[in-house]
Length: 232
Figure 1 (cartoon, rainbow, N blue to C red):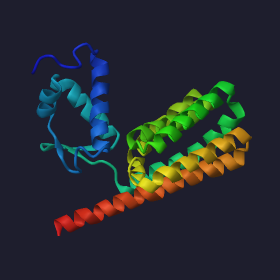
Figure 2 (cartoon, helix red, strand yellow; figure 1 turned 90 degrees about the horizontal axis):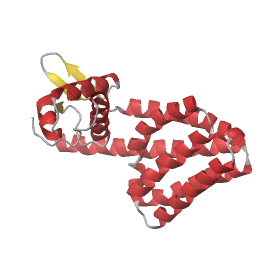
Figure 3 (tube, rainbow, N blue to C red; figure 1 turned 180 degrees about the vertical axis):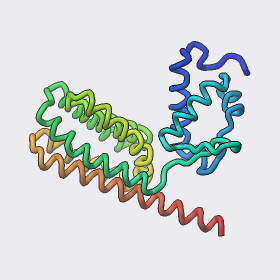
Figure 4 (cartoon, rainbow, N blue to C red; figure 1 turned 120 degrees about the vertical axis):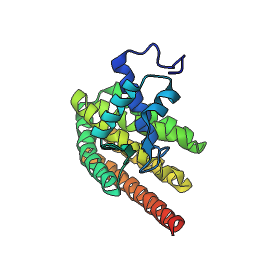
């Protein structure tokens, strides 16, 4: 095993989780293709660690449904199907509709100020057309609303769902016109929160999620068409 691992000061249990995060991000960011084999030894050499935490991470990825272990063959990338992605959006839509209503009931001035601060940063980077920064702030914006529910359980539940959706949703902001419509939608969400209108807030955030869902569907449909043309 190569020396000078970046993870040499990480405890064994934490190491497996870190490797899981790295491999999950690579799968969701399409650095690994669907059906690609993940070789334990190659990954251990690349990351300069033993094979044990690699094996643990791959088992965890299998539980998440992101890889498939085939006996006597190895571990292969599955990623998400269009149905999986739609399911995640449906769950997110229902949960965030409830979350924003709870947030309005429970938030204090500090939570509201943080939501406003994140939105101002989104406006700033939208003007600069910095898609990477906007994607990060989009995640933070929604997570800040979750935090305003002041429910640890709800916040964690939504973070788990939102992580997967946010990775696929980044494809929607690659369209230049989406930057402007997205900031308008986030402004409308903020205005409904400030107004304390729970029904409007629920409707506004769910329309925003549905719009993103439509764009993500289109991205994957176009990608499928391109792949089919290449394979013809």
